[in-house]
Each structure stands twice: as C-alpha cells, then as structure tokens.
Length: 570
Figure 1 (cartoon, one colour):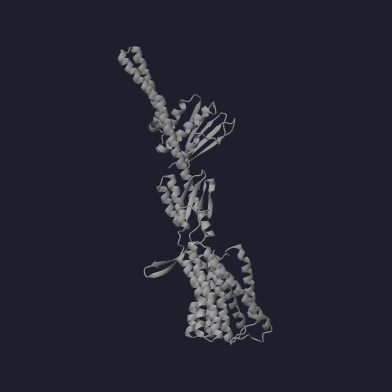
Figure 2: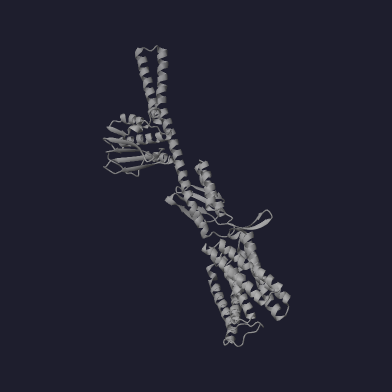
C-alpha cells in the first residue's frame, strides 16, 4: 500500500510540475499537445512502480519524470519572472542525463548488466551532478543567454559544458553497450534490446534536432520533431518491449472492443493451490501427482521447465530440462526439492521466489503422500507374496499329499488306519487354512469386533498377557479399515515382544477418548533400538494413511511401549 501511494505521489508531482510549467509559459494549443506527450513517462513509471514495486526500473522512470516536471516548472516560473525559476529549470539537466544513460543502461530490471558497468555508472552520475550544478550556477534567462549577473556564472558555464559533454560521452558508451547486448543476446531477448536500442537512438537524434534546429537555425518544425522524439522515443520503445515480450508479467488483453493493459499474467498462489488440490486428490498415482505439481510450478512461474526431486533420487520434470536451475526450493523435512529453469523472457524476481516458497508447503504434502502411497503399495505387494509363499509351501503341499494319499488308498483298498491318518491330515490342512485366513482378516474381528479379536489373539500367546478395555468399547464397532489397522498393530507388537524382546509379560490397553481410538502394548522384555521399527514401519504408514500415527518407545533392558492411534467419530 505504501509503495502504491509513493508511486502515485511521485507521478502526480511530475504531472503537476509539467502541466503548471507548460501553462505558465504559454496557453496555446501546442502546449496541451506538449503536456499530453510529456505525461507518457510519469504514467508508465507509475504503472510499473505500483504494480511491480520490487522492480527498480519503474522508480527510475518516476525519478526521470519528476526531474522533467520540475525542470519544466522552473522554465515556466522563469518566464513569469520568478527568481528561483531559472535555477529550478536546471533540474532538466538531470532529466537528460537519466534519459541518456541510466534509462537504457538499467533496462528492464533496474540493475546494471554486470559489475563492469559500475565505473560508467559512477562517472555518468558525477557528470550529471556537475552538469546540474553548473547550470544552476549559470542559469539561462528566458531569452536563451546565460545570466551574466550571477557571480559564479563563468565557472558554472564551464562546469555545465564539461558535465554535459561527459554525460553525452557516457551515453554513447551505453549506446554501444546496448548494441553489444543486442548482438550477443539470444532470440527471445534480442527483440527486447532492439526496441530499447531504437528508442535510445531516436532520443539522441531528437536531442540533436531540438538543440541545433530549434535554437541555432531557427527551424521550429524540426525542433518540435526533436522535442517529440526526446519525450516519446524511449517511453514508447519501453512500452512496446515490455508488452510485446511480456517483460515484468505485462501484456495487452482485448475484452470486447476495449484494449486493456493486463498485469499479473501468471496465476496467484491461491489460484494454483485451488486448482492443484483437487488434481492431487483425484489422481492416486504418486508419479502423476508429482508430475502435476511440477507442471503447476512451471505454469505458475512461466519457466521453461520445472522439476520435483525426492530424497531417494526420483525426479519428475515438466518441460524440457536444459541448463542449470534458476531457482531451487527445498521442501521441509528433507523430503526433496523443487527446481525450475529460466524464463524465455525476463528473469525471476524475489516475488517468484516467494511464490515458490508458498508452493513448497503443498509440495511437501504431495511428496509425503507420494512416498506414503509408494510404501503402502510395496507393503501390499510384500504381503501378497508372503501369502502366496505360505500357500505354496504349506497348504498347497499338504493338499497335494492328501490327494496322493486318497488315490493310494483307493487303489489299494485302504484300511481303517490309513483312512484315519488321511482324516487327521485333512483336519490339519483345515486348521492351517483357518490360521492363514486369520492372518489375512481374522474371523473374530469380523464377527466380534476389535476387542474380542485382540483378546482371542492374545489368549493364544505362550506368555501371560492382559487385555484392558472399557465395557462401552467392547460393544462398539468401527470401520473395517480402522479395526484391521489396530488389530494388526497389536498382532505385530506382541509378535515382536515374543520373538525379539523375549518378554515375560505383555499388557495391551485399548481406549477411546478425544475423538481417538488408541491402543498401547507394553512388555517387560530386553528392549531394542527404537529407530529399527521392522514390520511396524509398514503399519505406521497404514495408520498415517488413516490420519493416525504410531509411537515407539524402547530402550535396552527397559522394555518396549508401542502406542498407536487413529481418529474416529464421536
């Protein structure tokens, strides 16, 4: 808000000085044309400074416009005989210096092309200051001659002349630099430099016409042409370069019969997040989610390419990756990073970095979700292979042996003992099938609920195990995915307590409070490194997918505590 107000005040100051000074000098129709043409520069500076305050170029144009406005005001006051009018008119020297040197040199971002241009900028700045000071010490009266009564007039005239010559030499150096930048630039940037180069040349030609033909040769027509060139060449070239090549995110839009100057071409962070959220939710594939995220970054920043890289090295790129990354944003938690290449037109600003930082939050969620989905898929595949292996190595072999025994008994007329053995073998196979089915989804969990299934599982353990649960929890049922996740968490925890911790007693507590269903498994075993979760890591991902979590607390010789929870209604 403050930057917008500052830009508006500077533009109003420039416009007020220009209008007042021109009307003080004369009220003829040419003055109104002069005012209209002169207002182009402050209008352009205000637009850029207000809409792109972080870009210094708009403020440079406003400073140039203010100098021009104050200089014209000084001329008008001098014509009316106001004493300080002539010294104030000396500010026009600063306008010429900025227009000749700094406006073309700092295009389009308000920065020097390289550090090698610093001496030129410093020398030009000193020359402009000397030109201004000399002109102020040797003011020009309305007739066009130096006011001889000024005590420092001779020194001022010399200083003004030297400053003006050095400024013009620096302008020629900058013009040559523009030619070099134009020739060395790639195709997207060449058009930008071509327009500003043409504007700078036209500005210099206009100054020559204004200085020689209007004053020295008495040809006001050529002087008027020079004045128009001085006032419009550079602003007009900048408008074309900025709009045509979409510098500073500006373009021309057409709505009906109206032509509009459109800022903020790229979508805002809110718009990107609004469109990205449903897309991520609707696409379950992790790679596709990361691809959508990379595409959103590329579209939002209008870059040649964008990439999302995970911590494990996997990388998804949108666009054709060429050259090094222009911006890199790490994702919190060390989950990965977001990178984007350069733009085809213009550079990336601090605003773009903030845009990328804002996208890093949903990016982290997307990367985390993609990693979780991948781990769940891998866990499901591992479980499928385990079941397949158990069927192949266990029940399948038993059934093959049972069939072979039946065929042999039929061929030999098996006696009662043989049939009894076959019957016992069939019962054992049935028990193994039931045990296998219980590992997939226990029947007690489907029929009696979570508490009953946990009690049934713990009743078959070889060590004393106590299960604590409230009376109201025994009668309550939960969705299948919640009951399954909690049951297998208990099953894995007690299995670890027996196999690895060598526990003598185990305690299981189930509770529901504060919108959470929780289970805690404690043992008095030897403990282990809490960082090595083993099979609990898969269950942690399963709980995480349900919005819950798993905590593991264990130390060598102090037993283990496993705490798992999921959100539930009520």
